[in-house]
Image (tube, rainbow, N blue to C red):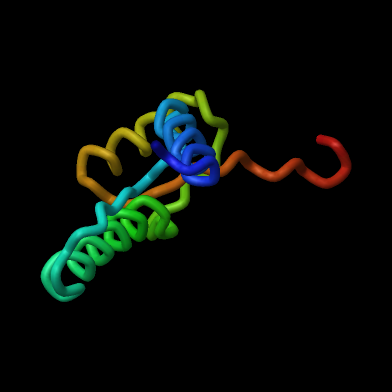
Amino acid sequence: MIPHDRRKKLATLQRATALGRIDFSLVKGWVTPEEWLYPQVQEALSAWTMANRPGHVVYRIVGEQWSPRSHQLRDLLARNSAPSSSTPPAPRAGGG
């Protein structure tokens, strides 16, 4: 028989798993932290860092998103694995 508070935690865990809201899980039962815990935590932190680190931009293309020239530049930089981003041009002063 599972105690009530533990059943509630289990139900919460099952719901989070079903909804895809768990990024990382860890099974307790390791003998020493150095053997199992620390490597798993390091792996989780490394994966999170890679997924959430800010991108390094070397080239910034300023131009209309769908213009042929902007597309050519984005394509050239992508084929050469050059880190880039696109920015629409700023509106001109005076509305023209």
